[in-house]
Image (cartoon, rainbow, N blue to C red; front, side):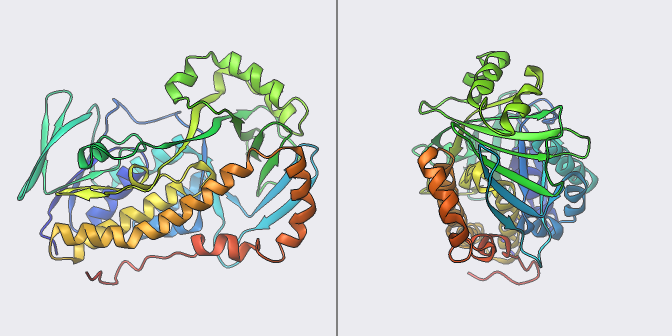
Length: 398
């Protein structure tokens, strides 16, 4: 055991509460510090939690709450803008299906589970600096307050403050030349209730699934070379974005109908998609990164939340089993870096496929039946990521 008894967890999104629950199970008392004044209710688009993520959350007793809010997606259907099927990926038959949900619902479920486990979450605590010593670490917040702990966990997302404190020269997230949008349309388009649909339209990609309430959750990626933060994107009125999106999807099925039944006040404008490049340093002294602050693989992976949960559990195991903080952090990085970088590389390829032109989409439609019988089988594409399991009781060694 490292001798770590207390942890400061910076960030109250997805990775923060999960890291806190994992640390608590490892015998370490965490406190979560969130920069915003309240929880992220109603913020963010859609996401999925994969079987490997559900398994990691199950170690912490948090999987049932996530299953309750998520819709089981048994298969994925790919189609072109004419509505013609290109291919279909069933989920792996011996694994639970991925769960599709709104990001704000996941925030709330994890927050509530953490609070129910007795974890303290403080709001309005924006980290501005640290004092890292051989015996402990002090966090300084913008409101003038401080907090002391044995370690500090950076779970503060792709624009992590902790990452820059660990390494001032750390790379920023790379821009993916796709703008991200989402909403719930007031229409139920023809669809199977347990399927996610990926449509490679004439001018842009669109994904969707039908909700039990009769509405359709959708997310769209609009090609856009110039980086645009979410704040910059929101400077453009939502009604203007909706007008542009309706033009882009005007000739696509069912994009046209989904956009026509989407209101501007429900449109999520999320800016450019981002992906974290390989970081030179995941930790320094008593600080370490977890989740998107270390390894955001872009939304196209379908694995961001699941990888964050895995990393939180593995970090807690390392702090539980190894004799000192440096060896625990080194073991954690060794366990996680190869896996998350492989997922990020796969996500980058998926991002490229979302900007295919008409000729490439036609070729995809012709080649897909052969590909799905050879190198694109569900086991080969999904198995390495979704079959990953963590043995909580296994002792981590250096």
